[in-house]
Amino acid sequence: MSHESAEDLFHFNVGGWHFSVPRSKLSQFPDSLLWKEASALTSSESQRLFIDRDGSTFRHVHYYLYTSKLSFSSCA
Image 1: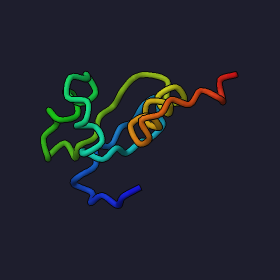
Image 2: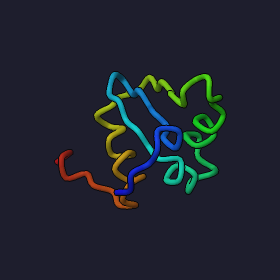
Image 3: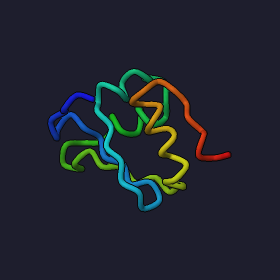
C-alpha cells in the first residue's frame, strides 16, 4: 500500500468507524455515489464525509477499494 499525503486522502466516518481512502483509489469509480459525494467536498471540509450506515459492512467496500477483491469470509 502506498503512502498518500493527507491532502490526497478522503476520510469517512461510517457509523462511528473511521476509514481513509486515497483519492487515486476512489477516482477509479467515477460513476459511484461515493466518488461523487467525496469529490464534491471542499478543502475547508477537510475531505471528511459522514455516512449513516453500518461501518462493519462498509469495511468490505473499503477492502475492495484497496484490493479490487471481495472478501466475505468473516460473514459465514
